[in-house]
Amino acid sequence: MDRPSRAHTELVPLLARLAAEAGRLILSFSEGGLEVRSKKDESPVTNADVRAEEMLLEGLARILPGVPVLAEEQASDGKVPDTSGTFLVIDPLDGTKEYLSGRAEYTVNIGLIEGGRPCLGILAVPALGRSYRGLVGAGAARALHAPGLVPAEDAFAPIETRPLASPPLALTSRGHNDAQTEKFLDLLGAKERQRLGSAYKFALVAEGSADVYARFAGTMEWDTAAGEALLTAAGGGVRDPDGRLLRYAKTDTRFLNGPFIAWGRVPQT
Image (cartoon, rainbow, N blue to C red; front, side, top):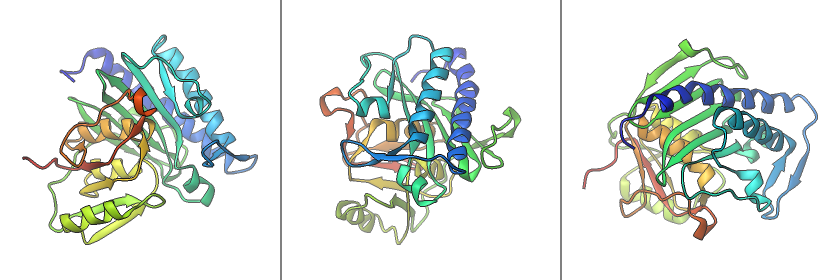
């Protein structure tokens, strides 16, 4: 995007707070009352996913009235908004399997798409006490806080990606790794590989804790939009294996992404 406007800048703390509040709600279900069912694709969904999505949709309607929202659980039920212009894309609980397994790296994702590209990204990692936000052209920041806390504005500090290490530290999916991903990382010379769930992998690359996150198995736009915007704002970028930018608002694929590599520093060709 071009230089971000004042309106974009003012959105960032509002959306970061909303994501943190949704994260706090999700954490509360860990204490009791959690219900689980299977979606049409056999993936699990909980009442924490549903309630968090409802909270996000209500908050977004207040913050950005009239802006369409592509929301994971609504989309799985066939409710898809107009994505031909500016729209929001959310995943209320990215990493439901991690959440159900008692792992802490699940996230709340809020992304803003303009011109078919993510320009603003919010990731809340409530169980780890981390909140991330990024606005392309204006930088990225992270707040460290107690689990479930809504961080104060002054808790955020700038983050940026690091130069590619040799050998690089790579991140891959815990549950959706495949031979193509492993082959790519072999060619890259990535001897150390960490497997994690959710969009938290984008945040680790954005803060300079890792060099690259490769994913050749399928993902959805709500899995990547917020993380891509955050990473781009921090100095990195996401490309397909041929070096092209990812495309969003892909109604032709029902919002399914192809293979991608999230780089801390995008290789210069």
